[in-house]
Image (cartoon, rainbow, N blue to C red; front, side):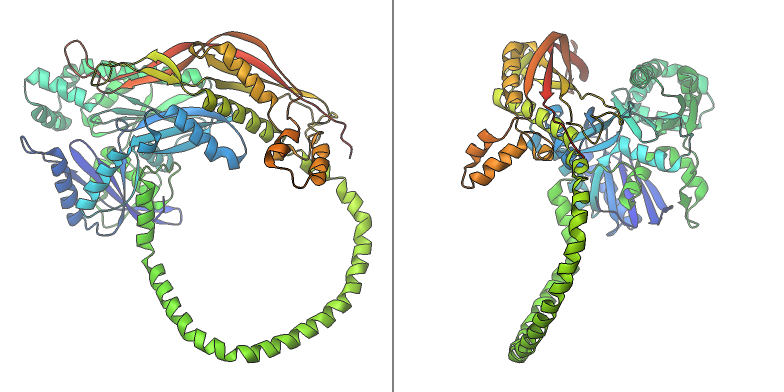
Length: 630
């Protein structure tokens, strides 16, 4: 996403639109303006048209004009999942993440927009990659609404990331503590945990609408009337009675939050959870922040002031701080637009991004037209002077020839001094030759498993869901094999097989592959052994592998050899590959059905982890070593 000195953040909620305008000068960010526009849907009216009307009114009143706008999709609309990957060569990183995305994101990959945010994993030895994906028609809906309202939309992010960007940039907390952000929206609740650069997120189905429904049931009114009662309750002094009305919904919310944070702590044993930042207009209910503090046992921080971001002198600061509790997402979006956010996921279709960049570079087209005109004029002048210029060049060439002849003697003397030192420089070659060992091994093993999965195709797993329109239930597609671990032997810096001589001695690496039982583990293991044994020495290991010298000699003797003949002659990476053991295991995946119904016919979204039995097969691969000399 391109960044801009001034940008609007646009949070399109269920009942209102929140917008914040920020400017950036260096690292200093200032609030220039903000607005909260209600979405008034008439009885029996079209909500989408009401949203466009509200956006149009907001844009006209606040004079958006051509100012860049970054909008957000809610966690309910976005598929998200965090995967862990090893630290590899940065050149291969994007490709590895894309392969993971294709495996993890359900549905037709060509019909989605996706992005990712990478952060250090808790183990310090790998990376956590948060994947985000959305159906393209949802992003198109946002783009159409903004275009109809005359807004200059430049990016589409995720509400939970936007809130993280705001709190992480502005609010000050101790570096050794894990900060928990809890944002209760109308349709879902987002939980974000971060410590330093590490980041973890989860979206819960419990939402502010559940609290509104509790008001509906208690006072026997419509949803809209209950929503109005809920908003007006913020000014009520009867906090205890209001909490009593919504206690069942609050109990469910706190239970879900506690379960999620319990899972987070199980994955991050050293996490120090002390501070809880609450966000969203739901927390304007009297007594609710105190209720959450008592139930969750955390220090509750209300968004009611700014630590780093300034407020322009022309803006009523007290009013802005009063509304800040509801503006966290909009603030984070504007921070991303101005280029100071840490997470920069953009789900706007790439074709639209390209059109927007071209639109901002119209001057380049004018410059090209002007340049063409200038060339036509100059062409006539240049042709007339070519003959005279060539005569001058001939004279210069003759002079240069004489100078080069005299300088050859100087060059020969210099080469005489350099030649003895070349042998010393040659001795350092072994250091550079070893740099690709780890990367080459990872690359070859991952390529073999990819070839295996591509050749065998998808494996029919358990039956999922309630079926399509015809009632047909389809099996879950699984891979034939999943790489669990890949362990390389360790070495000490002062040993003969130290880090600068990784192939001085024979090495044996161990990998564990998980194979779903339905994929017939015996056959899959056999095929994987064949692929690993056939893995050629990659270019990153060409200078270090003992077999490559003979192969280079063969290439020199057979310059007309075909690629197929060269592939047969190229030495294999591993001198020996064996399957040494297997044990029972399991693979897990998430089944998501947003349209699931219960026995009464009510929609009850399902998002649950499911498991299938697998075999954990352990294999060893041997790299033949050689004596390396300095």
